[in-house]
Image 1 (spheres, rainbow, N blue to C red):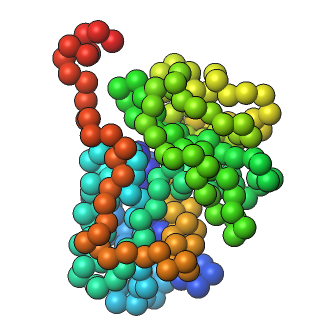
Image 2: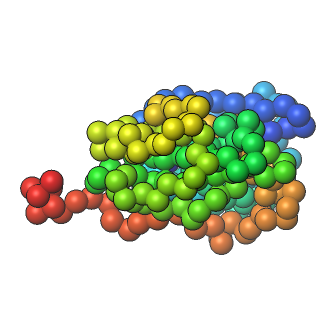
Length: 223
């Protein structure tokens, strides 16, 4: 869903990870990385309990690739799927340090003058939970709730940094370069699996948040 190509395997208490910034190289890397991580852990595909996937929001092509790939694997292996929010994955590394009433803003540059936006608090298990519904919005129009103490993601620098400029005092951590990692998606997926929230592969749906891919020529001229 972003420039980061990321695959993780959770086996017992250990997490095996491959992570690389590869804006146009996901399709070539993902399947070999899956095989490499399984070999590293000494596991066969048939020993997997479930397969998690970043369901979006994010780049349309990348989200479609991830969903299609995971559906193919899950159907072939007859395994359930755990759809994970890309924005929650982005927020997950920051939620461990949150106090009650505090939250993390996660955003991804959605192009076309908008950002994908989510705000997350910490649940009792230390997992990112949405405070408000995820949305795609112009940074100047985003509804920012009270209690934001950290902000991460490329949406902070989109549109000349409007979103970062709107953050109120008290924000302890701002990282406009942060990208989601499969290791953090794995933490979210474990929570879903333990809660019995796995779904069938044929029920997996991407979360685009919008259905428009690009500006029209007239809109490009106007902007």
